[in-house]
Amino acid sequence: MAELATIARPYAEALFDASRADLNGTAEWLDALSAVAADARLQEYAANPKVSDEQVFQLVTGVLPLQLPDAGRNFLRAIIENDRLAVLPEIGTQFRALKNSQSGSSDAIVYSAFPIAAQQLADLGGVLERRFGRKLNLTVQEDASLIGGIRVAVGDEVLDASVKGRLEQMKVALTA
Image (cartoon, rainbow, N blue to C red; front, side, top):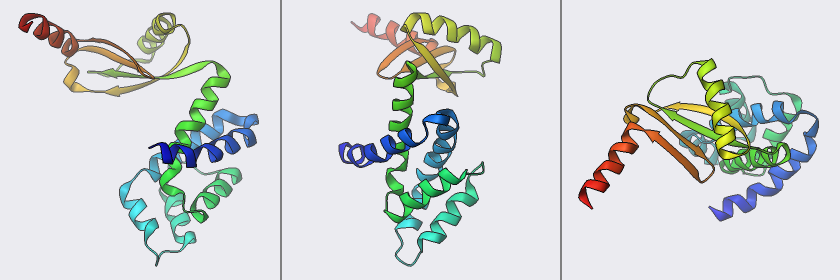
């Protein structure tokens, strides 16, 4: 994956520099583009030599859940013309890292067995920010295998307060 990261870095940095006035808006459309570009069927379609760049562009913009601004359309055209569609998810990851480092925050994924209400998520966010010592951008993903509780991943740090995690700890303790 180092090769993808190396290819993605100049694109992410250039996009970050060009969009300093609206980093949040750029992150929104870039996340949507990254999600679409990660689809294996789209990658296969784009790699077909019989398919033109314009056809790939029309397909991608046609399935996006939002309307791309002019800067987003130009960026997507440059990515497609340079055969970098497969690198787009990594560009999105690196762009978000640049954005987070500027704002002093980190992305956090909260895995929960059940949906979390907005107020509960806000309260949890405050507790987690004190625990990790920085501002967190929370994303919730449901994972029924946790049985109950939550698991939080912030970069390479994981806080496991799930029933599944505790059962695993008990299993290890009992078999040791």
